[in-house]
Amino acid sequence: MAKKVAKKKASRSGARKATKSRSKSAGGKVYRPRAGASEEEPVEATKATRAGGEFRGRRSVGAFTTAGGIGTAIYGGYLSDVETNAALRGRKKFTTFDELFRNVAIVAASVRYLFNVIGKAEWTFNPAKDTGNDRLAQEVADFVEDALHDMTTPFHRVVKRGATFFTHGFSWQEWTAKRRDDGRIGLLDVEARVQKTIDRWDCDESGTVIGVGQRIDHGADELYIPRAKSLYVVDDTFTDSPEGLGVLRHAYPAAKRLERYEQLEGIGYETDLRGVPKVRAPYAEMKDAGLSDSQVAERVKFLEDFSKSHVRSEASGLVLDSITYDDDEGKPSNVPLWDAELMSSSTSSADAVGKAIDRVIWHLAIMFGTEGLLVGRSGAGSLAMSKDKSSNSGLIVDACLSEVAPALNRDIVGVLCRLNGIPREFWPKALPEKLQQTELVDVADTLRAIAQAGAPLMPDDPAINAVRRLIGLPEVDLSAVDLDASLRGRDDEDGEDEDDVDDPDDRDADDAEDEDEET
Image (cartoon, rainbow, N blue to C red; front, side, top):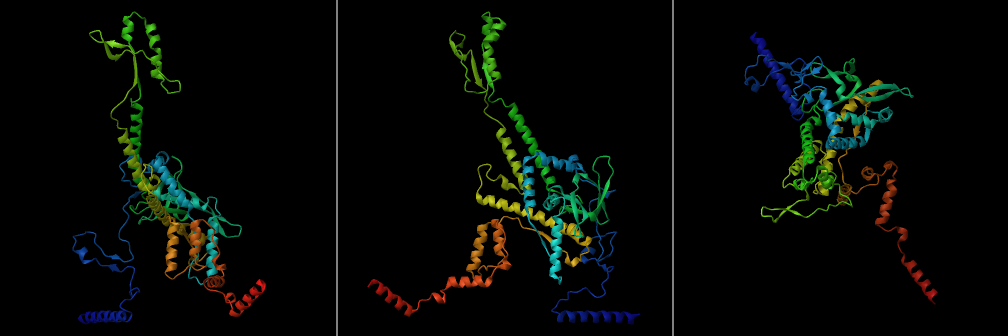
């Protein structure tokens, strides 16, 4: 038995020496799977883990085996919700989000602005590389692009609907295939499945979404939509819930404060007594003088009418008797018998409420990255600040599109290729353009600096079309540019042509002809 153990140790030692020798010969690193590695091979716990305490469920886990699980509990397809606010629990939260979008001006303006920019993005379908058949790869890319622009719903609207994951936490769309006139399979449409209609989630043990149950109306039968037939985008950065966590959830508390502040502002305006007419008339004196009620009412009618309808006009005016009350000694006092004035107040909370409203609006704009919309509203701001804020909005839009693009390639481009039997190595990739604002002056200065450094812009440089796109001009076919002619033209500008050089004999002959003409 001891001999067998010694042989095993010797063989292991020899294997380690052989591995070290191979590592040295390969430059110190070997980038290949270890020989004999198995998917069931256990991974030993580290010393730090072993020293951390007692775990009853401690066990070895294979390198290709998942040990943990998702933190969101799902019971019968329903997600366990940790929200304490009833308005944000279950499907009701999406109704709450829709109300924010419809009723809060800054939320509506921010969402509209961002999604209009998202819909403006141009998409390119890059053919697969290193396929050995570039012509076929380009044909596949052209087919996918044509198929996505041959749907009932425009492609840019599909992208905008997919980007609603940014606001609601996730977006779900269902595609339907069709047979094209050329015999290939395309897409009839990609239709939105509104978030508030998604009732249940079908997930496996690891939390991967397999499908959803949609309930259009309360009491209606549930419709099952498979994941394989859907375009699904989720914001799962801060949660592993399949519903994600959208920015409208962050904006809800501030939006509720804004609603309350605007209510207080309206109540204060409606109950503010400043500017309300206040009139005085000697009712008691007229009674003491023996006038009847009808006579008193007739005398003060003009003043009462003025207090009820005091809208200013060209003919508005009021003439009153200047007689005053007598004091105890029978002398005229400073208190007039007839008087009309507007009520006033030395203090008001309107300014404080207005500042609170402005502050909350600014906070909401920051959440959406659209504070550039508010630059200059208070009389402050500059062109540089406006450009900086617009650039930040462009970064947010680019980030949204970078999340939509992988889902689009996986759920739409991949589906089209599979339905048409296209090998995976020929699948193209859909990529959106970068929408971060670029100043044309900065681009021109950079190109000028590069040229001055010794790398001038050639006539067929792709930068030419990039600059033309920034200006809004159509692109040119750079492959049709005659590079040799362009270079010859540049040489002719730099130096004189041989035919244009003056010959001394020619100059003498010209001078002689000029003298004959003068004679």
